[in-house]
Image (cartoon, rainbow, N blue to C red; front, side, top):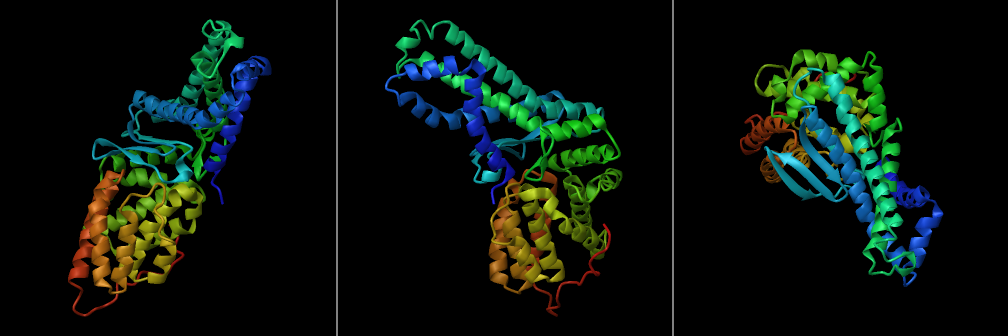
Amino acid sequence: MRSAREILVGLLFGAAVGFGVASFGSGPFIEVVDAVEPRWAAPLFLVLGLPTLLFLAVAAHEVGHLAAGRWAGFRAYLLLVGPVRLERVQDRWRLRFNPHLATWGGLAASAPVDEVGLRARMIRYVAGGPGMSVLLGVAALIAAGILYGSGLGGLGVEGATPASGAALGFISLAVLGGASLVLAVVTLFPGRAGGLYTDGARLLRLIRGGDELPGELALMVLNGHAMGGLRPRDWSGPLLERACELPIESPMGVVARQMVWLQRHDRVLAGEESLETVRPWLERSLEHAGELGELGEGALRMQAAGILAAEWGEVERAEALVGGGRTAPLASPHHLALARGAIHLARSERAEALALLAEAAEKVGDGLDAGTSAYEAEWIERLTERARNPPPSGRAPEEGPGRGVEG
C-alpha cells in the first residue's frame, strides 16, 4: 500500500506542469513549447527535468523550515529530500543516501532546547516551509514572466530551438514556480500524512491553543533535550508528566508514553527503578503504535521488541514486532541489530547474539537521538556481557506484571 507522502509526490508531478501552464495561460506556455524544434525536445526536457525541478521545490520547502527554526533558536538535525539524507550526527553533518520512499516527499527536523516563548517560535518554524515555497513560487513565476516578456533572450518565440537556454529556462521557471505554489497549498491543508501532521494542521493547533498545546510544547522540548544528548534517565519529570496528558490516541500521545518507558528502562540500568515499572507504559504505546504511521511505528516496535525479548523472554512476540526486518524510515541504524541480538540472546543463541550486538554497538553512535543512543549503548553492553557470561542457573529473564495496565 502506498504511503500518503508517495501519493503526494505523484500528485505534485502532475500538478506542477498543470499549474505552470495555468500560471501564464495556456497560450504563452504552449507557444514556447511548440516553438522548440524538434517537437519532441520540450516534452522530453519536461519529463527528464521534472524530477530535478520537484526536488528543488521540495528542498526549498524543507530548508525553509530549517532556516525559520534557526531564526527561532532551534537546532537543526535532519533534512530528507528525495534520495538525499543530510543529518547531524555527533555535531557533524553527514550526507547519505535515503532508501525509504516514504520520506522522499521531504522531511526536516529541528528542535528547541527551552520553553521560552516556544509557542510563537514554533509557529515561526512551521510556517517557514510554506513561506519559503510561496516566495520561491512567486519569484520563479515573475522571472519566467520577465523572460517571456523580453522575447526569450532576444531570440523571439519563433526562433526557439533545443539549444535556446531562454526557452528551456522559461519552461523550467514556470514549472518550478507552479510546483512550489502547489506544495505550499498542499502542505497548508490541515490533515495527516504518514503519521505526521501537515504544516497546516500544526499551525492550526498552535494558533488555536487548547488543552493539548502545553503537552505538545513539552514534548517538543523533551525531543530537543534528547537529540541534544540528554539521556532518558535525566529527562525532566514535570515535562514528561505534562506530555503524558496528551491523549494516547494521537501520535504525540504515543511518543510521550514511549519516552516514559525509555526513561524508566534507563533508570533500571542505573538501579534506580524496578523493571515492572517499564511494562505498563510499553504496552500502552504498543497498543496505539499505529497512530505513528509508517514513519514512526517501526522504530517504536524495534525498541520494544528488544526489551520484551531480553527482559521477559517473549521471543515470538518480539519477532512479530520486528517483522520482516526492514529498517524503519526514522529508526536509528542500530535498532534492528539490537532487537535481533536480544531475540537470539533470549533463545540462548549466544554466537548469533554476540555478532548482532557487535553490529549494534558499531552503529549506535550514528543515531540522530544522541541521548537515547547513549542509553542504548549501555544497554547493548549489558546484553553483550550477558551473552558472554550467562547466569550459571540459566534462569529465564524476569517475568513482568500482567498486561493492560494504564500508562
